[in-house]
Amino acid sequence: MPMIQLTLPEGVLSAETRATLQQTLSATLLKWEGAPDTAFFRAQAWCRIDEVPGGGFRSAEDDLPRFRIDITVPAGALSDRRKEGLIKAATADMLATAGLGAEDGLRVWVLIHEQPEGTWGAAGTVVRFAELKALAAQVRG
Image 1 (cartoon, rainbow, N blue to C red):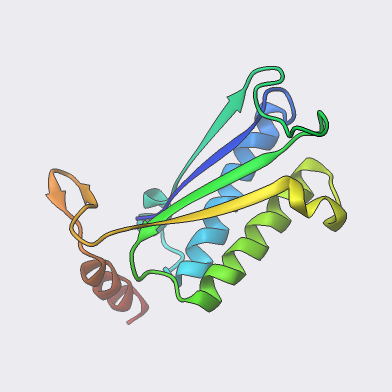
Image 2: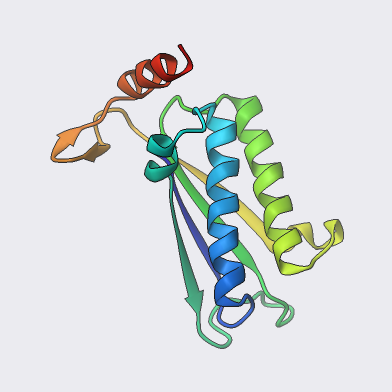
């Protein structure tokens, strides 16, 4: 199931805004994965936010806040079209939440990590992408 790790400078977003962004990014990821909008699939989409203290996450040029969104999905979960859509949508989510405009897009980097089949597990067992696809298809009925 998908996981998101957002890295950003400490204090850029309030606790309430961070919580809302976690839900927003999770929903965006599930949409682009093509997962059903159910409690089960939402519960499997985890989003972790790591705040880096003062000056620990910046460019060599300036002190403007930067944002890195690492997204981990099972290999094969996203086509090239879905990856492009996810990157565009996650960037827009982050910019809107931070009160930034499209001109600040290069301050948001989205990195998609595909976890090879057989290396993803939960509940003490290997979770296979084909099993997730079959479960999603059942839900859609």
